[in-house]
Length: 192
Length: 192
DNA sequence: AGGCTCATGTAAATAGTTACATGATTTT
DNA sequence: AAAATCATGTAACTATTTACATGAGCCT
Image 1 (tube, chains in turn brown, cyan, red, orange):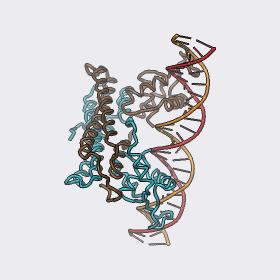
Image 2 (image 1 turned 30 degrees about the vertical axis):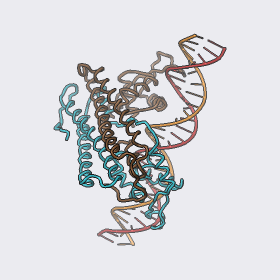
Image 3 (image 1 turned 180 degrees about the horizontal axis):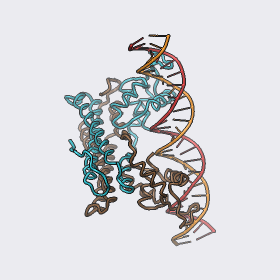
Image 4 (image 1 turned 30 degrees about the horizontal axis):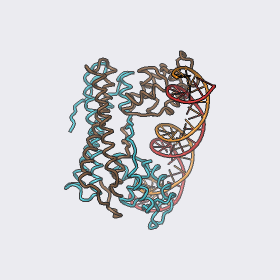
């Protein structure tokens, strides 16, 4: 149940409409959470229903019209409680290493270019994050809030660094045996 | 749609029953994908329905009885096709950085011990993965399939390294007072 | 007015989680 | 044979994705 809390956080940082939130999820918040606009509108509806946020009356909310939300005290309290909640880390979920492992069984086929592509995408994202760091915190963070935001950004940087490191090695290693033979139908034991 | 393909991969590596697969998902496959046994049984049913796998007749499959599956040619073909599919990397989803960011808005509160706890959990997992590497590939990979499996394991290692690196810095930074009435807990830290 | 884009929204399908039920096997 | 455990399974719920629909404002 993280999406509603991500929205509360974003709205506390700055009251926004659904489409603004969608854009912000593609940027700062998006280092560790993504959401489509449909998810966001639905969740905003629920939060409003629950009395945690409310629509500002300023731009006369009707359909097709911008509708700006702000967080109510109840929403802030809920977020406060969520911050203190304990929750074990979840296993990350990414199909690419899975596909690599599948390739180990049915043959590498055309996977190498895909690995290269992903390596480059992660590299680009890493570069982008570093650019954010340079641009948005030139002299270091200025407030407590900025300090935390920078910390989260660095989390994104560390994760992307991990991906680039791994994919670089994987591409190297698989380039060694171009074409790659296939293991055929022989099934041997599982690892670990 | 990765779960069915993860199952096909696992079954090609070694025909198994649902509960065995569940255990294997907590181990080797689990570096990048997790699944509960309910998900797995349901998906096995679908795969059998679709004619991609079949239950072996050996242990007479009835309820409460072990039911072992093997992959049919159609399943192998489907997996083959999946390996060559292109798919953009998805944003990782983790609540912890989100909670940190929320803490930047509503106050850090009791989050520091939680960060320490996560750091230690990731450290433990990292150590476990490294142990797998030492134990299962002492002289390097012996077959093409092992080479790929080792590569995937190293992916897990790189990701966990990223987490440990980030959490270590985060704990350090937040222990250095400033901001919240938060007494610094145990904050020793060193990445590998 | 007609076409375009933006912001909001509905509907349906897929994926994942949580709680619980039941038959078989092993242990005491 | 009762209890504990293992393996399979059902049901209900929550979360996420994909496809499509509609009103408002803008531009020419």
